Structure formats: structure tokens, C-alpha cells
Length: 443
Image: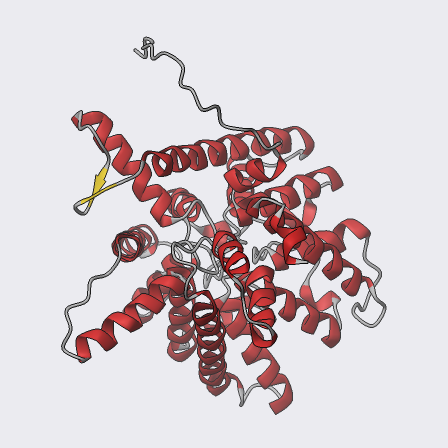
């Protein structure tokens, strides 16, 4: 089986696994035991795609599904957050010993720089996920136990914890997170889960090993990847918090006591990167805030995380490439390290293809969806591509063709525009010779 799979490119395997999961999810949600009301095929596929891609955009409310249906949605969220391939490889590792070929394939699929400790890393990912989500569910339960029957409070706590850590942004609360804008425990717990889910498992794994090494008296060094992830995360989070506070303190936050206004600014800024929870009405947001959300959502989370977007490392390489072009340096350098040319090309390709996809889908939706403002359409497209899940009320009113466009956008956004292109292309043999070099006019 592994040998057969090995003939496929990693991108093709990822795309195939995601589409199969969406199809299976739609089938399970279509069962009479899973839904309370009749639902169209396109709405079932849309819901399954949104949940599996951990987006959170919905054309039908979650209340349309029974407890069994909501359990299926919970499972799809978990699979979508961790990745079907990660879970499959983990289960395989419990029963068989990975050979060299399997380890190399697994490393390519999971985009690990080193595949030698692949089994150890997979076990760490699953353990971390279970521990973090259970702790999160326990803390959330403390905010819910006196509002619901115990069994329902337990399920809601687990659902919200998984939704937060997997950056899905789905909520079973009647008014969403707006009803908890003055609940410090709920906001802090959810913020911690979202932040941890967006950093990336590899960076967390490296930070833990770094801490143990320091404790043992060694002098370890973080990889360039983790340094970029941590610095980009800090600047994006800090910057978005400041912008949200400045633009919304006299708008959506004006009726809140200042401690909760600050806490809600932190919550909404971090959530806007990929999760999509919000404690204020998005329709009332300042236009500058909406623009800021689209920018940080487009950048998104870090590689190996539960979130999406073009990724923090990709954007960092993109900025470094621009800096190099302006300065006239001979190579792209970040934090004392030279970046390989193939990674520069990939970063530029990812950014360019992502922008092109968003422009194309926005253009299509402007044709198919009547009566909506340009900003609503752009925001919907970016939200779907970044698997953010925020909308200004347009999702439930999309036409069937519009829903298809958004489904495709969620899939492309989840696995990456470049990955999709590589998955769909025919394999091309690289020629051993090089053509003569010639320069062209650029300005």
C-alpha cells in the first residue's frame, strides 16, 4: 500500500485525502440520524468542507444537526485540524515499524525537515493535542456547568475546546462568543488554545526540547524556522491587538469596562488570524479593522499548525526577498542565515498564486452574487481562503454556484495554492542542461 502511495506526489496525496474526508463527512451528515431537517446536497458538502478545512463558514446553522450530527462535525474538526495524514501515520506507527521509504514519504507529506524521528514527533503531536484540548475543555466547563445540564456542558466544553485549538471557529452557543465577552476565564482559555494551535507543533516540540536542554545546563539553539515563527507571531499578534484597540475602543468596545475592552481586543485580534471567533458583531466593525483582519488572516498561522493562510514563514521570506531586491544584496538572508533559492521561489509563488486565486474568486462572486457590496465579497473570499470563518452575513445567502466557489476556495486555502498546483500538474523531468542567461527590462 505504501509503495503504491509513494508513486503519488505529496501534494496529490494531501489533496486526495482531504477531498475523500469531505465526501465521507457529507455522506455521514446526510444520514437521517445526523440531521433534524432536510438539507440539500450542496449545503451538506459545504458544511463538511467548511468543518474539515476548519473554516467555520456555514450556509445552515449547526442547530440543523442532531447530537450525532454535531459529534460527526466534532470529529471532522479534529481530523481537519490535525490532518488526516497525521492521524493515519500515527495509527500506522502503533502497529508497524516504519521502514526507510515510509519515513521519507511521511517526512515529505508532513513537510518535516528531518524524517529520522518521525514516529517520535507524531506521538508528540497526538499527546500534545489530547492534553491541551482536555485541559481547555476542563477550564471551559468551569464557565458552563451552572448554565447547562452536566452532560450537555461536557459536550459543549469539548466541542469548543477542539474548535478553538483546531482554529475552526465553530460554536454551539446560541449567540456565539458574544455572550461570553465578559467572561474572563472563557476568553483567556480560548485565547490560549487559539494561540497554541496557530504556532505549530514542530515549534512547540522544539521549544520544549530547548527548555529541557537549558535545564540540563546545555546551550541549545532554536532553528531558523522556530525563530521566524516566534518573531512573526509576536509582531502580528502585538500589531493586530494595538490596531483593534485603537479602532474599536470608541466603536464596538465602547460599552465594555476597560479591562474587558482590552481582553476582548486581545481575543479578537488573535482569533482574526485563523480561528474566526468574535465577541462583537462583525457588521459593526470599523472598515479599518476589517482591512486589518483580511491582512493578518491572509498571512495566517505557522507551518505545521492547525491554522491556514499563506503562513508566517512564507510571508517572512517574501518580505526578506523584497528587502534583498531593494538593498541589492547577492542573497536573501534572515537572522544570519542564507535562504535557499528554491525556497525564495516557493514563497513568491505561494503569495502570487494566493493573491491570484482571491482576485479570481472575488471576480466570479461579483458576477454570481447580486446585491452585495464589494467589501462583503472580498471579505468572504479572503475569509474562505484563510479558513477564517468570519463573514458579514453573505454566506447563508450564497447561490449554488457561489457555494461551489467558496468550497473550492476553502480547499485551496487549507492545503495551499502551490500544493494544489503541484498536485494537479503532470510530472516534468528537469533537463540536465541550462539555457543561456539573458536579462530583460523590468522598469
